[in-house]
Length: 272
Image (cartoon, rainbow, N blue to C red; front, side, top):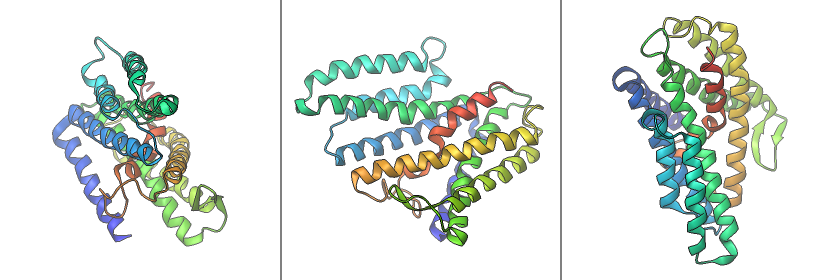
């Protein structure tokens, strides 16, 4: 628990530096780095399953997709980059050394590209949202991250305290319905509190009740994403995706809850 707390403090300090000094572009680069490391760990899991993903090609397109909102949108979109990736992967698959794995390799490499960088690039889009203040997008991005990550923390603490009913024992034996409820409640409290504290930086129509209503599905998706990662790790027969972060595990263990939440956050925020 102590290691997890220290890791959280360090990571949030990094986010704060990006908000105060680096601006939206610095935030996008931070997302790109996290996405790249997550995608790399995802492909490492595939290799443990006996597959041979196109690491270099996949990571190249992954980096381009997460940076596209800041640099490439004027001439190519993330959807078009994804289409180019499909073409490149389809040509590359012809040279696969193990013919019986061609279909699986193509499918899993493409899934890794869509599931990690394509989904996380919506967080990059959030960081670039214009608003009443020059840091509106950055504050919205931090709000999104805080809501999803405090769901993890709230679920962990509540589950340890009163968790009794298993949520998905065949996927993640330690997760309970009580923990999930505690995670959602934590997300709502944090979301409402931050919306009030940062109201000068946020759009006027991002009210406390909209913050609460948005936090609920984001927390739910954070829990689902965590379960999906557990399924993949079970298939690879490992507990953590890495040892990069003491008390947490790998970068994938850190970013998993944001993967499904980022597109929903973008869908809400860009309508404000």
